[in-house]
Image (spheres, rainbow, N blue to C red):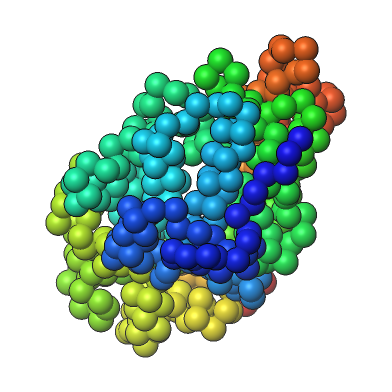
Length: 416
């Protein structure tokens, strides 16, 4: 098989970004360049890719901006690889793929997923990404129409949708490799470029050639390891839960008439209850002004607030005096939790509702491959196709497709 050009050569012209993972990433056209230059996209420079995970992995300071550019690069070589195999991708479809993958995370708020459960109510980053894309489509005279179809999984060519969102998509290929690099957790370091050379299209759907089956298995194993070792690391988990509780408490105090010093954009979300139906143009513009800087500045400011709950939560995060976390296979007994909660409330002159900001339980689950979702498909040499679950050995499949649930219990270390 001929070697795919991975675009890592030195630039000969045009705009180029130098990425620590892939080397030179060439910007293919003026539309992509203008999208990157847009303030909506530039905001991603100030949005952490991994939230507060840097409290555990000191190198994990990379941003959504890094990730978006990495996805752009991987999509470029994917298009090149598929065209080499005579898969038809028109210029309009190419532009649609590149724009869709570039903008797929543009709706992430400060510190990523934590803000979906605090400053807004049940509004996913995917929904906000779509709103940004629709706004940009007006600004760029309809140039993103195909990208939006692909992002919404409505394009008639299914493989285009699958490249942007599926169980083996460009998004996952980049974030596993990138997060592995910045955290130093080697188990997540997949060979994304090799996997891409194994992509093909059969009956309009994305498939992986049979010789790539072990690369797929490595990808699924890497995803499983990264979730347990990084994304669901108990200290990262506790930090994210504390951040959610900081803003839950801040909104509660605001409703009671307290004045909290913070940026105007953050103040807007503290003073307004924003759900999915409320996300109009005004809200979107306010959201576009929010980034990690607003959050860190507010937390530093609120450390000295007279409300014990808010000030203590903020100090715990800023000083990294995080809660103790116990992970187990079954939830902690309710009477044990109530005893710890009551004692903490009594010691600190708090109500049990206030004490619950510091003492709480929950659960997390990890499933590398979901048999209920759109499957990863393997193309056999004899021309047949099959789901990856029929190709991997049963032991591997059982481990990768099983949903493992663990329960966590968080409490201040000084309550032991």
